[in-house]
Image 1 (spheres, rainbow, N blue to C red):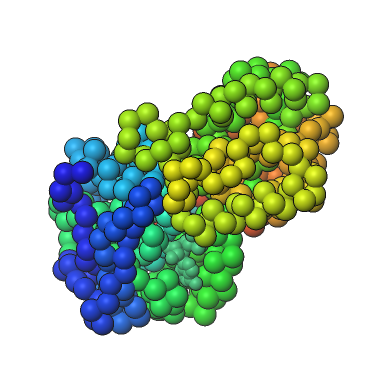
Image 2 (tube, rainbow, N blue to C red; image 1 turned 30 degrees about the vertical axis):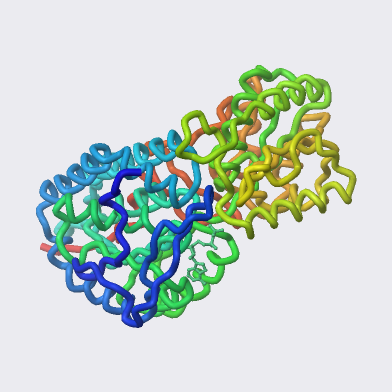
Length: 480
Ligand code: ADP
């Protein structure tokens, strides 16, 4: 890799790049090689409180900046992302492991989110509601919520910030962000980008270090009016509890357990294509990955044969190497969790038809894996696998498929392959999910509201709805 100007080993507070007060730093390693990429500051509550103060001080000026000027800054940010797509993608792959093509795609969708919200804020209209009597006017106007805390995960370390920063900056909010500790550089790169784009000092602050201390300070502060989090349901629940003391707005993008239904009438080649992208993208480490593949008994054999053939050909390797289709898992801990789930499944009767082991490349590389004879009582059916393991289940009727699909506390994303128009509408009504892909395994797009129901979260990101959580509605009655 050439020297990457986006690799910052410092935190951004009030427009200055700082170290931790303690001088402590955390190592960041490349999951594909185990090599040290660099270090980042191990910041805590004091630095976070200074960042919150900086964001609070910058708020009035940023919120009252003429709209077109603020929109112009977002366009600068969009252009900076695309102009530097290669450097940003390399940095992402080095710290996260995903294939370079996926990293480039992530930078591109990040830019698309920024663009979308730059466009969308121009249409964030209020209302004048008809009054029941003469001499009155009722105005409904929209205003930035204030300082926003953002806590983001390692699986999409750049674009998860894009879809939070986009609406926040468009609305005129200021930000204190904490990227995941294992992939901090793509988050810190947003600090460099924001400076390049001309975003004023203190508007975006970025801290790395102890999740508990930084998260704790964000949650405790009465000045932070909203918190947006993407990560596990477990941590999300804790943050919701913590938000009660200061009654913050919360947006939560939490875990999923996506069912992927293949009906008897499906185009099986398309279904296999969709299953591959939905399951193995990012080594199975996305919250919308197909977690449980349900196939109608009459087409199971054919579907499985095609799936095995394609999966066997997946090229596992370092994300920077040309042609790599599956990189390493994020760390050994995650890989051990996946191994434990496979062991649980085989103990309960599942069969491994492909893979099942650590990959000969070492580190946290894991073989693309397919399991059959899986049942609803196995961990692979109940929990988010977050690895390259595809359990294939069998069903015999549409009702059974929908019941099995809904048999989870999660409700993020579901997929179904069918050509029956009536069934498509029954699925739309019957599947208890925030997002549904019909004949598609890849549905994330800036124009549509991404988000779950049940224990998968609160709020939406993207779409026109993605702006709502960053704007407070104010009602003013005027008598004249
Ligand atoms: P993942 O499975 O994606 O690692 P986590 O929920 O563990 O999901 O982490 C997502 C983000 O939340 C990371 O930035 C992590 O550092 C942060 N985080 C983890 N625990 C806490 C906590 N108790 N308070 C605040 N943030 C946390």
